[in-house]
Image (cartoon, rainbow, N blue to C red):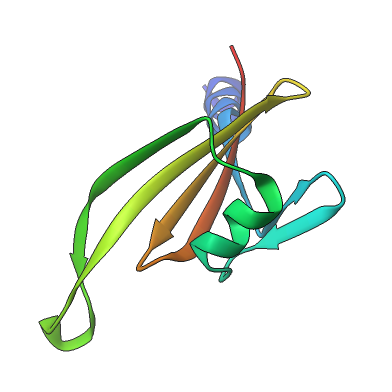
Amino acid sequence: MKKTLWFLLLAAWSAASQAESMRCGSALVSVGDRAFEVEERCGPPKYRDVLGYSLGEYDRREFRIEEWVYGPSNGMLYILTFEANRLRTIETRRNQ
């Protein structure tokens, strides 16, 4: 039972992981960068989707949530999530 549990945990962990930065050629983008800075350094994404909107602090403003996909690069896809035009997460996945 323990071996099965460890295998499932390892599979879930390796399926997708999060990073704090991503390399685009000689440029580097990091969590917190603005959307225009990412596009300037990495070029346009392969896919761009609006996921929805979230409420800001104190529910006074709505912020757009977008997902950009870059790659495959060396067999990896990079999924960037932006909230209010700021890079919030960088997720990596093996291209299958």
